[in-house]
Length: 213
Image 1 (tube, helix red, strand yellow):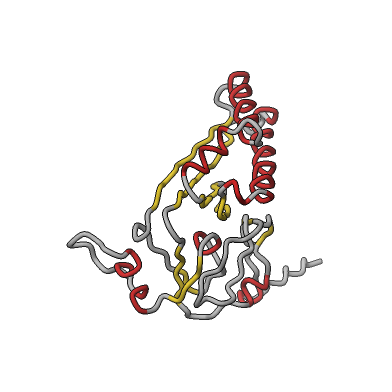
Image 2 (cartoon, one colour):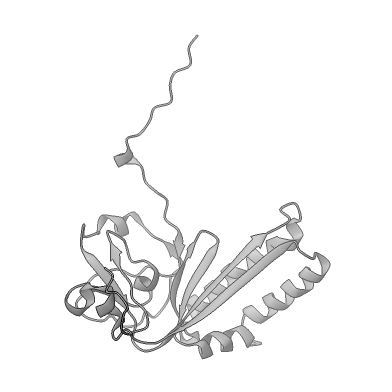
């Protein structure tokens, strides 16, 4: 008796599962800035986001004024030590739900890439105020993590990085992509005119810096 071969779907039929994002911003009127959202729904990218792609159109994203980019991630070093790392992963959804419900706390948007959470904040002051507020979810979770780290040294590692960006100090490019990265926190615009090149999108660059694409 021969085993039947497993049917293979053609590449055109395959669907990649998208990462979970903090916002579900839609590209509607790309010619005018959009107001800040009243909430940041915790929803994955849907098939509609991919169905509405404008093939071959180059887009860029901008955000008015300075802002902060915050990266955070965790690494499980002792997978068998579940009590040590499980609370870390349970705490993050609570914080994201809180930030979603209270956009005045300063989170503009974000998404995950693998095990890294990328967030865009209105300012570093908003980020630090939330991190140290006694009446919000982060501080109790941070204290609980430190206590667990003392009981289970080396079981789980965490890291974060913060970047402060000024207008003209960053540039973005998206081709055949749904709203991604800064495109989910700021305003998506066609990469035309001065925005056509990386140098134009960056504004004034030091002498000797190439234009890029």
